[in-house]
Length: 467
Image 1 (cartoon, rainbow, N blue to C red):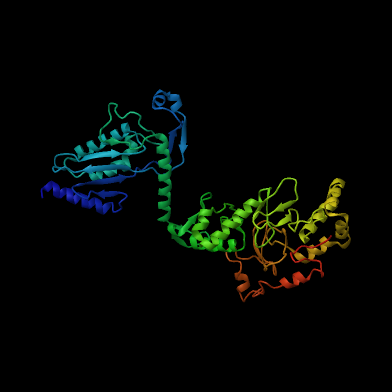
Image 2: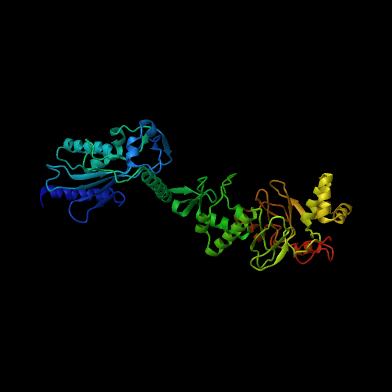
């Protein structure tokens, strides 16, 4: 082996040791060549812009565009640009006599500017006076590109329209077809690079306060808050089991960012995600004024309401029901009322105008409001069957279910028995802790609540019949 070949072998071995990641250096399977990918170090405050993209423009129209048109630039919200790629092959008499054969390719620089970098690499070899040059070239591309091309506070991205002009080095390559393709590629690359850096960084979880690799964490895309997967999986599991799919929000204080379905799917099992997906669809449909649900517990399919009709027919089980009270359709008879509805109706009736009172009497009948007022039903009900949320002081009704309560207004978990705050991630620990006075009392008092109604006052569906 000649002295030059021996020096080449040593140089390539050194590069493999320095750049041990295939993203940075790939040695040719045969011969003395390879590929180096070099990321450019930009000033910290550097921003990237691109010319306004106009659809369906021909190449002739692009050439005819004025400098004023090209001045309309849009900012590209990215931090990372793809590397400059140096492909090289070492001749037998390198480094003693000749420069390596190479090409320089970059997606975000036009060939005119890449040619300037090629010239800088040539000059560095000449100044090296027969020394190995590949590592020095990587340093030039990484540390000096901005100085060589006079890039400081901003960079306007370009796509060369004509690669045949004078001054273009044949070794320079811009391997992108048009500006739209370049912008799309840069956005995708920036996202993949952000993900790679996130997964390889140590991150402090805001819930358990342990440092973990980013690969063991998840990030809310909108607010960028990060928590470990274990904490979020436990948090999401509790909320989904409780049916609170709208409560899957960022745990950071006062942050209301909602978890997206992709994040939820990555953290919970398939059965739980199916429940989440179903409940989310249901909550969404509930926001639509022309959608109601079949009241049968075994069905609960969405039903499209017809305008100006108080009757609906389930397309799944064919059950015909009243859209006002969700009981079997009762024709022109007045709707039965639940306790919560009675409370609201009484307040509306007492505080309403004469016209509003007449409308309520037409709909529900005069006897309903006479009985509410005479018996003072609302006050007695509030005193016996409601409490204040310990955080926001909103009034809460407990119709049935366990003693773990969730405030409808601020989503705080609290104990119905002692009004204590409960752990947001696992509220049931309060009832499993022998040291609390509510130990083993998760379901205490349920039977007494139901016995509190007079005989015959509540029907089998939980509705209080007044008419």
